[in-house]
Length: 239
Image (cartoon, rainbow, N blue to C red; front, side, top):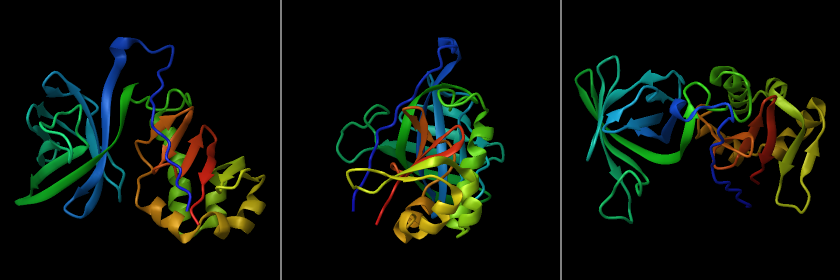
């Protein structure tokens, strides 16, 4: 099996003003066993506007406010509270700069549940313009076809999924030359050989929301696929 891992980077529009940028950190993990994602903006010792978390099942952002120090205290509008600390298996003491994730608890509705989050990516962008180096669309507009492909693919609906592909589609298989798919009909014919059960399982384990960007594309998973302004552009196949 060939694994394609591409490091994240964040590109800043030349029209962006430094004072409009927010430094962010993305995390993914779970509350108990419920998958979530989280984006945190820190300003001084406060959690800045734009910080939020979401449940992978719903992809609805819940704003977070609070403070940071040795612990992060994050409160959502419904009254739920995260109390988290930075974790790392190899560094001591652990700081925001050398951590590999967060751990702690979420409390709400009379329950306290464990939380574990892994570091995903980080950088800077203007709020609402995470994908400014790729598109002029809003974040929600840009993610719409990504979510369309995601749900169609994991739902076993190739005929729907191909609607969100920008042809020609590049498929990296580990061979010296990539496989180029030129149209929807060809992709449907080769669907099962490109999107193996292992690939689809890996896709279902990640979120089509708050994606990192690299070289003018948005990346889902650890290099599973890359999206441009017109949809899916590159796939890294898993046998």
